[in-house]
Amino acid sequence: MYNPLRLLSSLAFLVCLAGCGGSSGGNGSSGTTLRNVSYDPTRELYQEINQAFSRQWEASGTGILTIEQSHGGSGKQARAVIDGLEADVVTLALAYDVDAIAERSRLLPADWQERLPNNSCPYTSTIVFLVRKGNPKGIRDWEDLAKPGTAVITPHPKTSGGARWNYLAAWGYAIKKHGGDEAKAREFVAAVYRNVPVLDSGARGSTTTFAQRKLGDVLMGWENEAYLARKEFAADAFEIVVPSVSIKAEPPVALIDAVAERRGTRKAAQAYLQFLYSPEGQEIVARHYYRPYLLEAIERHRGNFQPLELFTVEEVCGGWKAAHDKHFRDGGLFDQIYQPGK
Amino acid sequence: MIVKRRRFIPGLGLTLGFTVFYLSVIVLVPLWFLVLRSSALPWPQLWEIVTDTRTVASLRLTLLASLGAAGFNAAMGFVVAWSLVRYQFPGKRVVDAIVDLPFALPTAVSGIALTAIYSSNGWLGGILERLGIRVAFTPLGITVALVFIGLPFVVRALEPALEDLDPAVEEAAAILGADRWQTFRRVILPAVAPAVISGFTMAFARAVGEYGSVVFISGNMPLKTEIASLLIIAKLEQFDYAGATALGTLMLAIAFVLLLAINLLQWWSARRYQRS
Image (tube, rainbow over all chains, first blue to last red; front, side, top):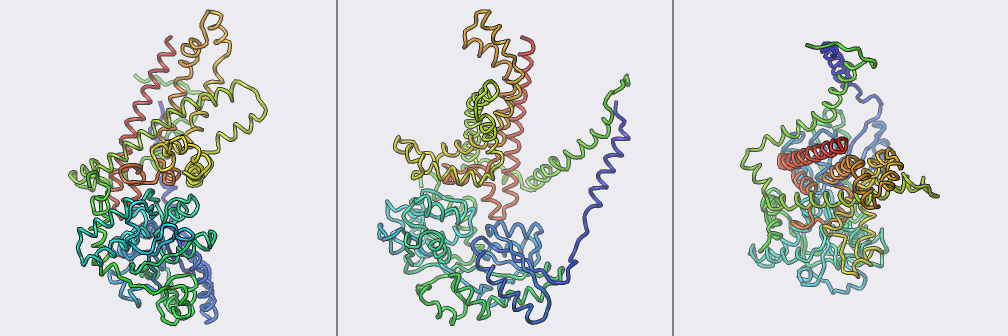
């Protein structure tokens, strides 16, 4: 038979080999590297922001700055940070995801959202409708989405952050219209989702379903995404319909204190976030169809941002945590729509 | 009493030690953490997740679609493997390479491609829709995606078994008066059954855990076309790590039991063949 001692010793050797391999590396280069962990549709926006900011940073004589970008679904990105992806700043789709980082990893304080102006949102957006050329179904406002025979395309609220904004926009509209009557709002939201033939797992998937598979009469989505879709696909194939009232989508940005501290990047990271609020940053933001925080930047791009009445998640749900508990939790209102007999 | 036998190939201790270590690091430790994390949940809550109507519906869908796809692949893969092994034809190399494509493609790419073809305005989906068959965004679509990713497993498992099969055996059967069907059923099938089962098993195991190629074609409608992996992702999106790992552990248990049963079946059929 085999020799157990030899087996053990070879095992021990291998374990040791694996154990001693780690804990090297570090920041060898002279310049600073910032890592911004963001969500999917901001890729083009931050490419431009990063170029402009590192130019400014290097011009001020503070050394070379490299900015790394990471993109993915907002929730997935938050999980990556919780699980140890070293992000100096995060720029995600909803405060709920940054809250999760603060709560689970304690890498930043719980009151992170009060540290920067406008709830830490240098730009906002809203939920609008994208319809086919000529608007054949005559979709003008929210009520049209609940009409039988209208096919609505929106992603799965359980897997997509953007989809949660869509859902809450519909909910908020109904709550406002019916003066806070939740039963009526439930009925409305259920009617809208009965018109949804496919729930893609992400916002980009829904855009593909609508634009390329030609499924559905109306696509719900972020205003900036609707413009992007028009740019990517044939511009005259779709029209953007802005409803009378919608939700103020607030994608927040935050410094991840513990990571920036450890990597010695706090100063650069803070300046980076401040840059988003600067006139130059705001101009870039507006060019990418996000609604800027500075009025001057909005004025310059007035044509892209139709005025409409906006409500916040805070107003219609009392914040993201409450919204999650009521709507998106297992067995919550969203699940109830699909329960048989409802 | 242990009799020390001389081995002609040295290094058993070292290689076995390495195997145990390697399997632990690559397979057992991550799975152990999965079980550990889900065991943080109290039993009533675990039971609630496991018996939730959506969980049950998605598990049933996942298992049925996977079984259907693996079964379909076992039959069709047999034909493909047979023609690749037995016949010489121009372009055989190309056909051989095509079989491996589902292995190599990123699953998301195959998912998007399949959806494009089978959705109601895709060229195949359009024809089928006129015949009253909807593929994309139905359980059938999920099965189609699983057939796609499972095919190479069956073909590659069957090829060596078919190569080992001496055509002379079939000739002997024919000389002894067996008709074609009898030859197939009594001679060929028992010989290749273990390989068919192992190909079936691999295709099935792959299908149960598949995510990327399915989410695009499935449509993800609650209770109708939500697969189990989607539910896990949904739970993770809400930072419900415990719930996600609980579902994962449940799938692990089901997969383990099924694989064990299939392995027993394989062992039994191999033994039966050897005896006969």
